[in-house]
Length: 155
Length: 314
Image (cartoon, rainbow over the protein chains, first blue to last red):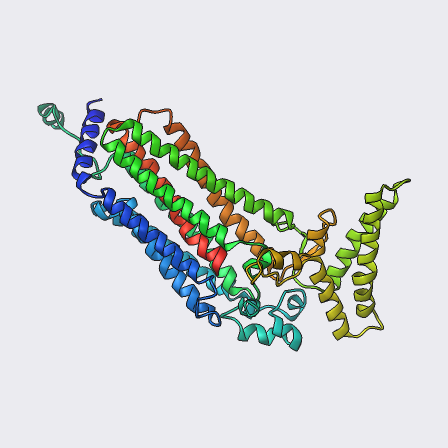
């Protein structure tokens, strides 16, 4: 019981410490930044976006924008900027496990089209130029990095 | 001896392991598992998508980028309202805090509503994940033509079973017959023993494009006009429900509905919690609760920040 009331008052003291952080002005600046960044990633969809031929530029740009937005939300809205060092204990291992998980999927799943048999290819959808050439397997390898490119050409 | 020592310090205070309330520790532990959960889903999507030979363009699967951007904006606004609710709660302004929570609840419901509208648009185009042979075919080959023929025969049998077909049914019989003679039969003939491969490919392509055109570029120039112009047989006659051809469409449907579905479940859970908060007095003593709920909600927003470009713009 006494333990409970203690932690309660403790949390109060904590909140008062943090009352100086945040603040309406700061939140509004972050909100404006998030809106601008959303507009920036949406800009890649507009006709004014200059890198239509190389979608990789757009992908890299959008991921950079998303990571920036995520950092803004985590640091300011989730108050992680003002937390003590315990924040690293929870976030760093989770981040590492996430990255390893993705990397470990690459050989079997990400590179699956490298080892696909001729028989399976016959029933798979293949990029459009490959379809006309009649050599889907070879074309598939050449277009490894940009599978969606043929679909985007008409836009 | 140790017993004596203990009794000598009756006022011993236990120190918390972390300088934050227990509830917040729990929420952060939960969120770190959530990071891994969504990182697994998003990571698998990225690996599947970039390892695929073909992936459908958003317009081919009837995804609307402006609607996605609007939903992103709605969620960002709701994150701000939660933050403001926490600020008000800390200042012991319970009424204002409840007002911001109510606004968050409304914005979150709006997000779910828009998502539901989008899901409905997919379902009406027969795009959904299916076990076994679903309505989506990877390419316009003889298997696709056979599936179209099967569906049309089904319709024809059902329609002709009527003793006295109504005017509408008579019209439907004509539509089915015209698709059979204009698209299916030429494709079957070309793909048959006496046809040639190039012609067969063209005819099959024509059949698939008639059912659902691939390059139906809604954002081209005339917007609505282009949409009408490119409408396929399935759009013109919703009762047809013919199989459709989308290269890479099955994998797309599986990943899209898995990612957005799990995200939507998280949004709905958040909405339930906000609804519960509405029945509480959100003064300074409840600031911790508002903060914990807010942390969860910001995380849900965070996931969408990644899902929006990955699903709509890539």
